[in-house]
Image 1 (cartoon, rainbow, N blue to C red):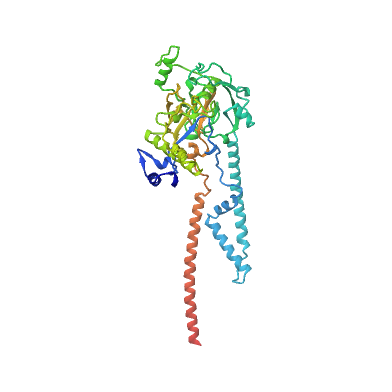
Image 2 (spheres, rainbow, N blue to C red):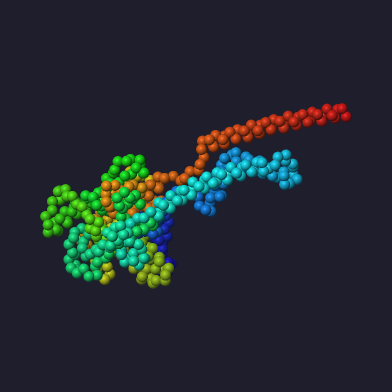
Length: 491
């Protein structure tokens, strides 16, 4: 970078790199924004765009693998001091039997043989129990689930459609219609080339990723921590049973995020129909209508769309943080250009500040935005949740619509959907990131209170034997000296 920057610029860059980990802007730590810290503060997702860099939805409760079973299980057996005592005793007997160091009066197999039988039986029991856990994991992880996918992508990957949903047929979506009303956009009245088909893909539960749009049917387990987007019930509500999570058998009501009233006022004023914002309306969607709406506002309909978070009033956080994040991004781009041999003018241009919100592409077409989510980092609290849903702007050039998210919008993995024909949501936490797994503990080793008592008893016996041997050997040595002294006097 030396030839590309002035001396003052080089000093500024070095100073900035030396203080990145310690400066705080408000309550945000710059180290977090530059990935210096491992601790995750929040999580960013785009609805309908699976994140394959994060963990999949596999859950593991088994304790051993084929390679680790023997070494780990055998070591577990020798946590019992009695087994260790008899192993050492047998080894000492074997040395006397196979060497000339000393003689042994007892055959070593009388000790090692019964010990080997006892440990073998214990290993068989431990292995059988772990095989059962492996089978349970396989049944759980390979259970059939349904996600929404673009039909062209599904056909390209030769995926399988769920025939139980709409008889395996796809849903055709007119992308020229707005996601918040059923009128065709004024940009073009033609639907040619602006239709996409959404299929219901049958996949295994373990293959669900964060960002997937998941379809859950009545009496099915929620496969991942999911934000509810639509359901067959009134106003997009759903009932779940969480007895497997918190032991409560009463059904809990979950609701979909709703547009703020100020946004509804704008929509109502721009509509040709008369609305009463204060009037409580009961709305119910069909599965096809819900699929079309979700497609138009997520990356399902616009795979290359920009996250609506980037079009929000403050970007990823406070204005100062957004500016600093933009500066860091431009700095990274400048370093890449410089390392690739780009000229001085190109590097300086990449460092120039620019607007964080662009509503037009380079060819002049409107920028497409897809729903984005900013949620809390994975944690074990099942009764709290916080996040923000950023919907695309309701008019061209406007800001994204921000909707706060709470625990009432969250379907936890392990909950059962009840009294609701179907529900659609976006998977935000999968596998080891889910709250259910965060609250689970590793499979403990079988070590009962009787084993603990036996260990204490064996230690007491060994201590008593050591004391007795010390006393007897001391008395024998004194007796030997006395006898030898008497023999010397007689001689």
